Image (cartoon, rainbow, N blue to C red):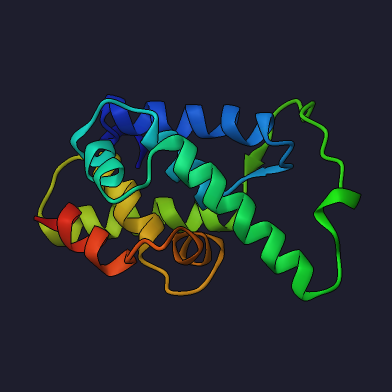
Length: 151
């Protein structure tokens, strides 16, 4: 499957590992892939930026989502301390699902490659999980972003 990845998609996967490590995550997840794409110079990143999802905006939305989710179960974010020293985070469940969905999206569209746009569409596809909750915190309409990326 990785032989189908464009240079921007490969860079996003590699950068997602760096993002996860920087954030102290034990695994690379869908939100790290999405953050990595926002840092690229691609049409996909420009669509995300236009929707209010630049790298800083998405990070803030992810922090707001984490804070809200932890508060719902009575945990204060102030009590948490993350270590940014994870040597090499592995792909987590949601990131693996993004990669699988990206392949399916590319095949369904008849594309011979998997690019940043496929990864992004795959990350935005689920209606539950960290990414859609973060988009809700940011006031971003997930369906509108999907529509703009699909055009």
